[in-house]
Amino acid sequence: MTELISKPVVKLPRKRQTLLFADHEAFAANTDFLVSDKLYVDPLPPTVTAADVIDLLRSCDPIDADLSTGVIQFSSVEKADRAYTLFNGATIKDSNCHLQLRAHSSGTYGEPEVTSGILSIYNLPLNTNNHLLYDMFRPFGPMALCKIIMDQGQFKGTALVQYFRSADADAAGAEMASIS
Image (tube, rainbow, N blue to C red):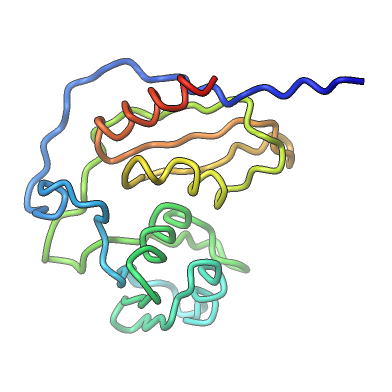
């Protein structure tokens, strides 16, 4: 019996006007990382502990989470970038609280704005998870969103990816389209 293996398909969004963003020199300079080795979090309910946050982010090697100052320290910029992309908005275990990560402390720089549409990815291998998806699409640039879609608790090969810069989304779409 021959097994048919399909290749990922990227559905590109319609072109839209590029948004401008203010006060973000790293983004404007086209650097590869929009975060440092620290991420910032808004105040969390007192029932959420630093251990809860570190447990949620453990796959990204957090070193420390000081919830009194709202600073989460990571082992590297790369790990902080991964956490920012994969865990922003994630639900903290045993709470109704969502983790809202920021690239900058309040009052320093504005958060980077997304200037691309969401890429819909189809026909991914069924063993794909958010970390593999991140590894597949991160080489094209910093991402705001990188999530596999679960349908009734099962992954059916569909995911969503959104880059901060539309040029990065275009590059990823072109590269993935040439593969399929």
